[in-house]
Image (tube, rainbow, N blue to C red; front, side, top):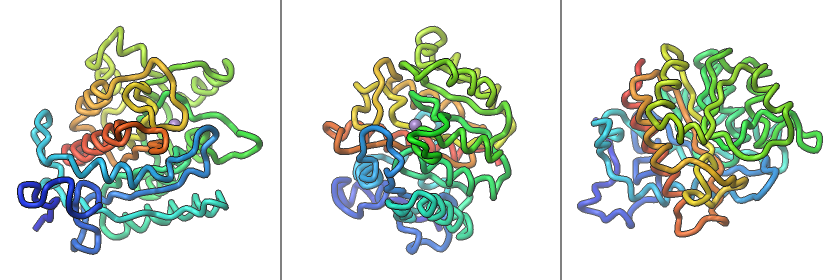
Length: 313
Ligand SMILES: [Mn+2]
């Protein structure tokens, strides 16, 4: 029997437990198909800190989610057992230990029987240990990366592990399927052309934020469905992919970004692909206003849960 969220017609949505969407904790279910992990870690931030408060803010915003996904005609909390596994702790003073702790937490969720993981950051550094855990389970995966930035820089101040470098490390560690990865939402000034040369070398496809202006959601979805057909896909969403007008509460805002409608519409277009996991990162509540960033992030999480429910096995 699947245990869903607390009934909002009996307990209003502003009340009740502070788990994601007021779902059961993993202790309250026999086994969960989908594990939701909070990862309150922001020691990898090169710009504005605060993403350590992201999981609590996104969970709080998620209490207002309703259960039925009208466009995908699925109830993500009824089609599969989803449970909140609480927070994974990464040592804030030791990066290597933090990466290990996050990897171990994700691996333990798989060991408990979860088939798909949805992680809530935290800064984007956490995607690297999550991809290591994914690789151990699935082998190399395709990466669909929503972000204003490539996050494939080499080092900052000599540090290899930061929120600007996870996908370069993942590529070096052979965690990703060659020529099956894509960045979506890229924009803004970069340090130099070497970033572009690196991404060509890594085989990432780039969908620029401005491409939404020329091809619309439909055109972007067509490109992504072609690239990701038939392979296991991990979706990493940096909330800064949205324009600061939609998501101001983040470390590295860039003007000219996507609307939340474009993000949610693109995700919906991927139903039926084989989605093995995802994360939503870089929500920094101290820079947020009226919870708009955490609300957008909670809806991105709901789309990912719907994609899990509609995923090819
Ligand atoms: Mn990022």
